[in-house]
Image 1 (cartoon, rainbow over the protein chains, first blue to last red):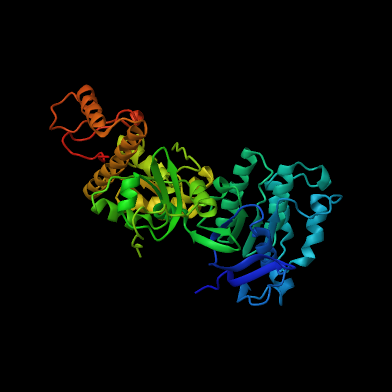
Image 2: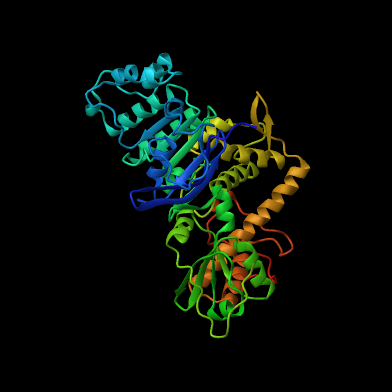
Length: 308
Length: 160
């Protein structure tokens, strides 16, 4: 079996006394497109910097492997095999695209100058214009061309399409599909633009409170997480669901959002209760996990049995 | 092949793609022996993950609607009998989901279950010319939520 591209086990990370990651665990198999979703400040960039070997894990962290290597102990080797693209690249603004390609080549053992050149042409990046004069769209495409030119096994994208217009974002996604997914490369895509990332991802993971609180294929999340609308009487009559995400009262009825919804729904239906089940978008699922109020309404009678 | 994907919808993207291709094949918009774009081509065109398109194509092939002739392209089949049966079951499932969505909407608007059943019966009367025993057909263009149908007498709407 092929070595996973990324293995993170119980990662703790912080700045001084401020804890940012509090036991993050995830595994990305080779060739997968893994989307890391989280709010601003959730720690996505901190996690990426750790993967790049720029931040050593805090004490009490477990295993950390990128392409089979410890990114801290083997920083140069690991970074030589990773492509990295963020929204604002730290590229010398006075260089031209050709300058940068020449500049970067020695850092990457597998750099292919002919490929770099052909990608720059293919992406329509002006070759001899200073980078500070390039449009945002061209900038990103330059970044992508440079990230691909050494044929990396893993490409880490830190919300690179954030500042692009919608048409450019779609084109960027197409480039990811053709040049990354099409070549079987592993893609670690961190973003809070859910709609952009959802169609590309094999697996999404939600980072919140310093941990990965849910992960899986988007289809699976949409199958498992549902919103159920029911009357207060029906609510009081049934057991509390094990994976409650949000309970909101709305015009006399309860809207219950929960994970592993089907069992609870089946049980309620078997008991003859009436309820409405709603499918949710990834947006709504994300909200439920991150800002949902998972407090079960106080029962008028004594405690309810918990559905295991 | 024209497909329209709605991002950020409650319906998973794979289901949207699959549903639209199925509808086009069943309605004859995509006739037998027509060639579909390759998995990679379609993924690029729609800007979706290659694996998503691959899963859709595999499901359609499993139902006998398309033929993945490796190296030679993907084609709409002359539909096998087994494939047709699977399609009908799938269509019924999809229609059931549409009924659910319609009923939800009606209830949300404050229309009670009995009224909804009545509206449905009236709609069937308006639209279905042949006697009730025959199943009315619905063209793929008129997929608007307003024209829902179901067999009269089957209690589906939840009673509050």
